[in-house]
Image 1 (cartoon, rainbow, N blue to C red):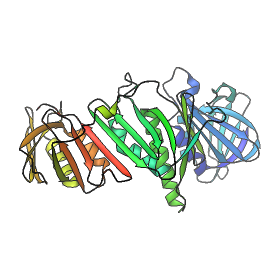
Image 2: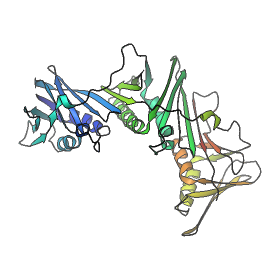
Image 3: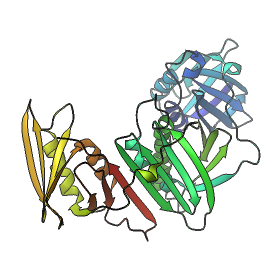
Image 4: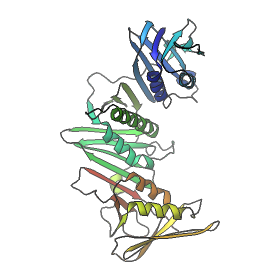
Length: 385
């Protein structure tokens, strides 16, 4: 194999492969990036951990076709150190791969593996239904819910995000058992039906892909909103856009019945300024117990007091003005859970729905009303303090 490719194009796509290649696998080939020179002007690259896969293409001047698999980490680090401009990649019969700058003497040699040793990537079955979704919509759903996915990999049904498309509503729901986030976006003129349970590692990678696509679209002043084509085929889902195809093996588990967790109504509602609430909560949480991170919110007419107590480091206190007309009450929370929700909301005000000191609280942006195209809520379980 021999070809010439622009450093910036190669670096961008190999950087994307870093999140998929599996460095700790018992199969050494999974730590590699697959490179295949095809036709006169295409370099195809791929990475997989057998659960996630990423396939991409860049333009290249191909002198000799062929394929090889080389360490994703080593390839990325060496490309970064290449001078700007064309990079020449060539391989020998023993899969030894050479990277050389065409404008300087800099050169690297990598010990590779034959391309035939790289596992085949999953492909959607012919005729599988596909859905076109704006990248900014998927990015918004992930941004508003990713933080409440459980990081416990032994609980697969919680270590994933539920993605639903019902009619003209797309939805993402996540929970770790202590909190729940749900985001809905209405997509006019697009009717579909789909349900997927996407593992956390795939959600993290999708978030990076969305950010990259949106950043590229903004930099190039594209007028058309970028889209991802989503295909569900068997036990896998495929996301295609911006010259890349990302595939994921979906979780085969039952997501908790989230609608039963969300309180139907709240007895009391406080309207609070989001930024002031977040600032006060963050300040008081500095003095909270390191073990629990707990703070107490105390409500009275027109005000909310935030307090924390720690046997080791002392107490914290702050108070902000809120719109609240209910009976006086106090309730404890893990401060981080509330802060994560506030960070995902852009409205200037939030609505905090309360019932009792042992009942879950519901947090919504003030603009999230039944008639809006975008609805968001978070449910946070209380804690004893």
